[in-house]
Amino acid sequence: MDREALAYGVAEILARHISPEPPQPVLEAVVADLVLLVEKQEAAPGFGGHRLAVLTVLGHNQKGIVHAFSEVLAEHGADIVDINQTIVHGNFAMMMVIDPSGCDVDLAGLKAILKKRAEPLGVGVFLQYEDMLRAVNRV
Image (tube, rainbow, N blue to C red; front, side, top):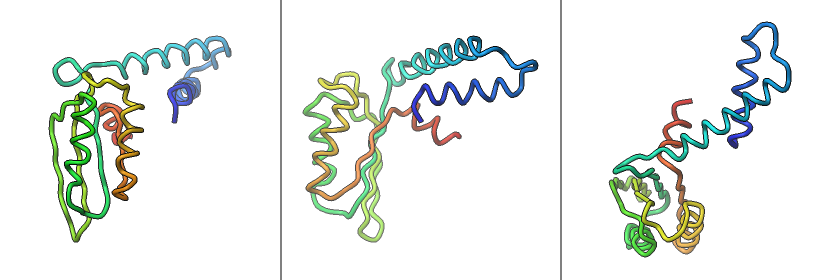
């Protein structure tokens, strides 16, 4: 769900609980304020004053998989803050918390680079801001 759809959803919930129902321009103003609030929250700093991201890699275990993704992160200036990996019956799962503040590309660009690196390995890669991951899992 994009931020505008989220804002409209929240505004609709508010409108159901307010009597009498506010006029459309008031609802649109509420939506605009909610979008700004979400954008401000997305820019909120995390570790060391920087917004953190979570990289998740899932797939069949193979040699060099940790190296493949840590190499990409290093090449683009992302700092690995924390890492956890496990192998269960040949299935590989890894989560890295990274600080992308030093990256030479934005998060969308880094995600594209990581996905390209994942293709020959046949693994799934997911990258998103930590606060967004927490918010989605809280719902």
